[in-house]
Length: 316
Image 1 (cartoon, helix red, strand yellow):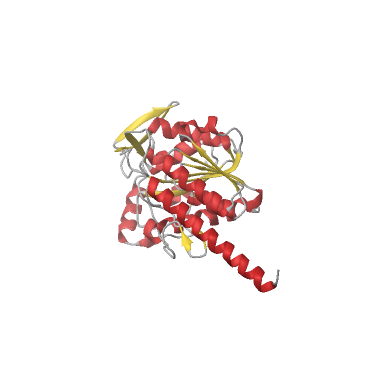
Image 2 (cartoon, helix red, strand yellow):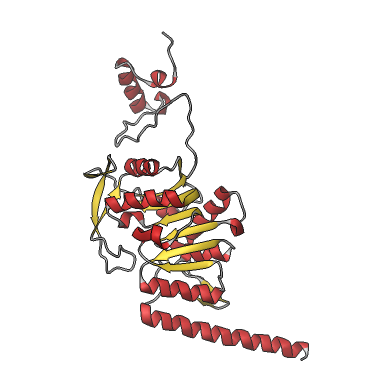
């Protein structure tokens, strides 16, 4: 076979493969509806949604991949990652495409079918799609993961379910977990779990929606302090708030957070006790920030407090 013939044969194979992929994609869409979250390139000229379409989902994938690369401090090929409530598996697919071993857990048939299709189309041998409910995570997976992704999931669970899941995840996490979720801006309701009280607000779920809970009629959105307390109660030792890479449209939401929770060993220093986040902390700032803060500082000093009392130790 001449070079020209070989090139033509390769072009014919690529063209045939493109036709097959498009037909299979359209078959998936006919059975389960179009992709609603992630526009994934399948081959030159073919994507799950539309060529060149980039939105919030792709920005979130970029952010998570950057977090994983930066904070794991090792090549992706050496990482084992768990993606919970994977939806159409956009995060899992991109991480697996870059070499990580990824297990994605998803309950809905349509999302699983789409994820399996993309896995096969891209030849992602290190990606496993497990169909099941995240509540059963400890029975669906048996070993630890370097990194656990809990993205857009926690606020679809009831309070007890959210607490149980975070405790389960800590036992599965070797390095850190990334928790992206909606939070409550008010502490209108509470519940108790393992002797601790958590605050937030109930939120109804429409289980027929493809991005909602599969078996929870009423979810519970934790307040920011309660979520931070839950992560600590579960055994995560440090929690970082992700600011960059920035997603401006997402940053506009006051009720949305992305936390990185480290699965470390607790440091004992001077016998200091573990503190809990209070639900309400009065705002404080240096007096130079303006008249409002100068007045607040003056009042605090008259009551025996103020900035000096917070930072300066007085010997008796």
